[in-house]
Image 1 (cartoon, rainbow, N blue to C red):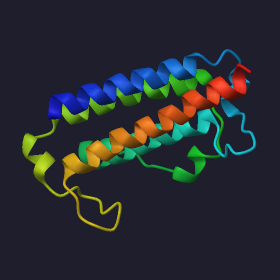
Image 2: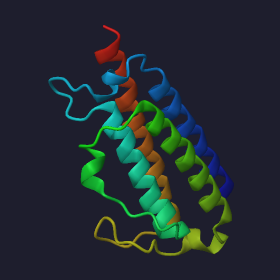
Image 3: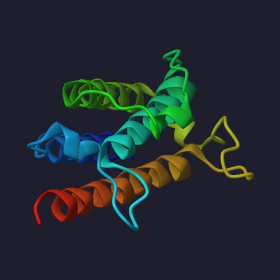
Image 4: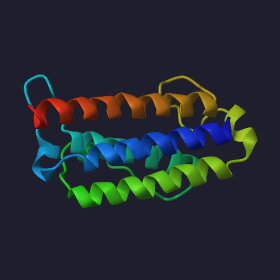
Length: 147
């Protein structure tokens, strides 16, 4: 499970990086339109913050301090997003790979949803969360930037 989770996160974060790289005009990363409340850049920042908090800070003791509201308001350069994705990918793979295998059966240290859950359950949720937003970013790019 541990190796598989690390590989799935890595694969999907690489896909996210490729989506961001496909934006030819950096300004398009920050476009929103009717019915779309978040830009691709902000969704990408949100994924980076989410994983650095829930995997990095909580499971890996990286010291990361999350500022969730700015994930949806701040605009950074495409280069900064890509660099942050690369660093996040390395961190996620390292933390998950180096966890004691017993951690996956233990209760996740943060009561995120108002109920206790095992760490493996929450990590599977985080994969789904990543892919949900990855799909939104792909759709955003195809609809807003190439029509």
